[in-house]
Length: 161
Image (cartoon, rainbow, N blue to C red):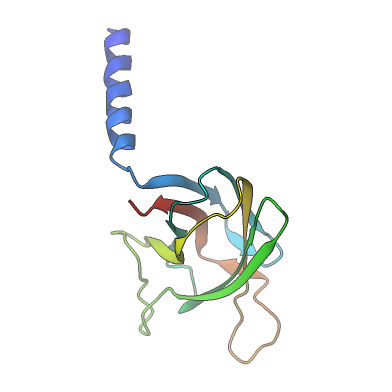
């Protein structure tokens, strides 16, 4: 009976994972109760294909404790040769009335945010993507030290085909 249950579980997992044919890389990191502005979330992946095009996304899981309409991120992508590309991006996270954007039926929402579209990786090797929040309150120069309401940060790389 135990072997039969193991086989059933194996086939279910194989089916679920095979349905996501576009996924090249998809990983999350748990944040905790708040995201400190000095905490850098890092994802490393090996890329061998230098010709194909990909779409990339930043995945944010947030809840109703997130107090802002927008989210500002500083994202750096380091290539195997040490070259680093840095982007400062702004994402809309809530409507003006405070209702959260994203998918989900409860107070937890999942946001799949575009990072880069139609990109290729010019060098074979290890790439490292680093994400740091740069959220500020209106009228204040100092960034928000402890950003509440974000529980997980993810990075997803998808094949264009």
